[in-house]
Length: 157
Image 1 (cartoon, one colour):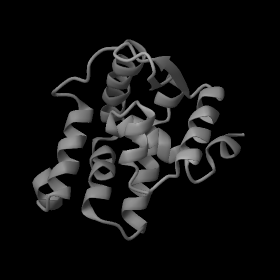
Image 2 (image 1 turned 180 degrees about the vertical axis):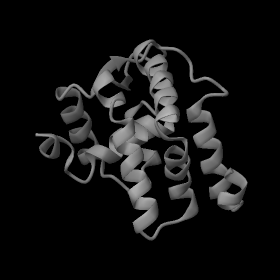
Image 3 (image 1 turned 45 degrees about the horizontal axis):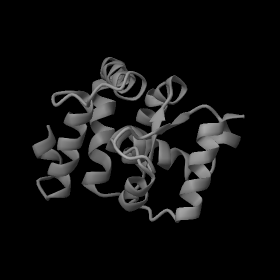
Image 4 (image 1 turned 90 degrees about the vertical axis):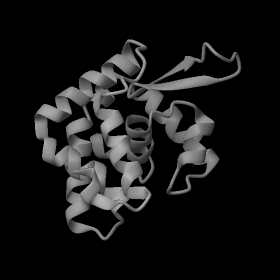
């Protein structure tokens, strides 16, 4: 059942992008897709993930015609799985430093870091709290930006 839900190319990517980018709007997700997801595929996967109970679709309080997508507890519980998949990919697949730095940090931090990250995601996605400036997501994002601007993994450590 899990493979049927998450086994296609895009579902885990959509969850990853919401989980790690802080993006919650359709247009943000579409524009930020490094893999170049097509608009119809994104819409289909968002609807599928909402129907499966991994995302909620909520009205955006700042704009009547926009909606926000938020992780549910079920999706937040995928953090250890995402961390393990990322660590495996960083080890066995050819990629760039900016695409591996978050995976390496999550792997190095292990379950204690995953628990902190899940608690942070619960605050953001379930309780509507703002993203903490000094939280795990901020650390992962800063490491990604350093790697993307050419300072590489050494600067992330």
